[in-house]
Image (cartoon, rainbow, N blue to C red; front, side, top):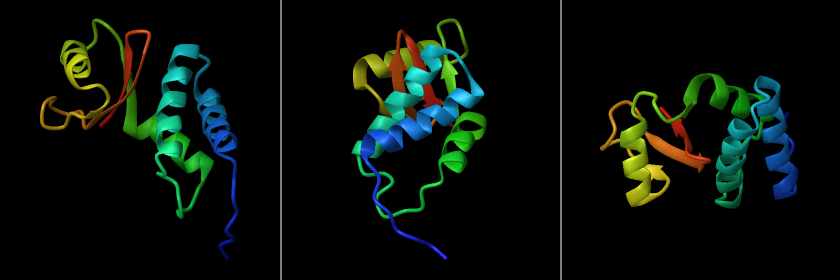
Amino acid sequence: MMVSVEIDAEEMIDSLVNRIAVWTNDEDVIALYEKMYENYVYGGCFEGSEFNVMAIADNDYVNWCDVIRDGEEHYDEIKAFYDENGCGDCSCEIYGISYIEAEHNGMFLVRY
């Protein structure tokens, strides 16, 4: 049985970020995910859909997203794209990466 509820946007973001903190204690990585989830929540990504904190955050951290730092593969391509376009769909420009989700302190959170 499904039940519909309303949840405050900040509470939703906090619950997702707290779940990411189960996987890592790196504050920069957590900040990247927080930026991504803020964009998702305030952009209406979860409106009218099932919201399962563990399924969303665990899959993002383990399966769908990665943090790219200076010196790592694709970093220069990602930075150049970001400098010109900001966050967004880069699937036609950078092989193997679909989306730049967030930037923080020169690091990027990307979705495959």
